[in-house]
Image (cartoon, rainbow, N blue to C red):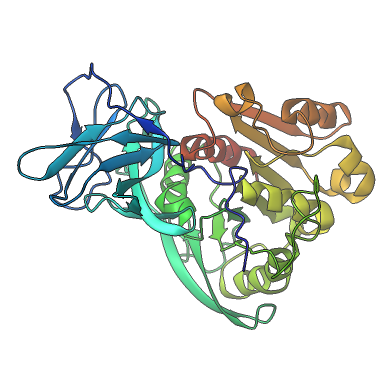
Length: 385
């Protein structure tokens, strides 16, 4: 049986087991339909407190729950078989959630669906005070292209999504740097454009003159443990866990992108970054092959230590920037991944002479608002020269 790496280490959605919670008794009644509802659907809704209210028709169900943020909230049924209830206050930004109907976890038929936790399921937006940086505005917009290609490494067809900035292709002589941007565990190549709004973040930064135009490649870095293998106690992630995607990236993805897009095909114009599992992949791959990249970003995905520099002496010579970010609640709760204190590690690299940047997303945890903000802070720092 394959063991999927969908642990609390990598995924921004947590299943709460049999945890039950009653809906709060005092609720501000200013709920509005979520911005990511299916067309014409009134539910789910969000109020000014950041509570989520759902409603589903299930007249024969014995119990129904809203499962969000690691807690299951009991819904109440009316005489028409409509179940309604709400959650406690949620952090700003995007959250996965699901409904539990008589023990079966199912998507909410009112929401759009997003790929997370290894399945397509429901998502909701809690309006954020800083949501302007990923809002749809009347500015020049780039494109998110679906790219199908053959991988010799995996001996099969693969898919990635590629963001090209506004004006791409109008001047065939103009070439662009490339950021290889990875999703988290249980997610896929759709995450950064669907949940993360990477394209809108870039469109707005470019329009404001805060970032240089560059291409973003978003591929699928998911992996599974080999059949019958289990990592030794204390050895997590297991040795070699990122090798499969590393080989695909270096031998298939980068050559394919350079052959088919208007790239500046050299290490000085190539960056890699990722969230959670994708950040850990970024760490492993760039330490193993610092000759391929110049900029490194890890969002809730570990950090680089001075011991890493000793094991990879070319890293400090070739890498122009190491960017590390976390949500403030991750730091408060000690959920900062492997390798020790990420802030202390990043400061130690700076003392060793490297260009580093450490960012903390206020009042967010291991979730998409932390990673949106991380990309928003990282993008203006790269490819400036």
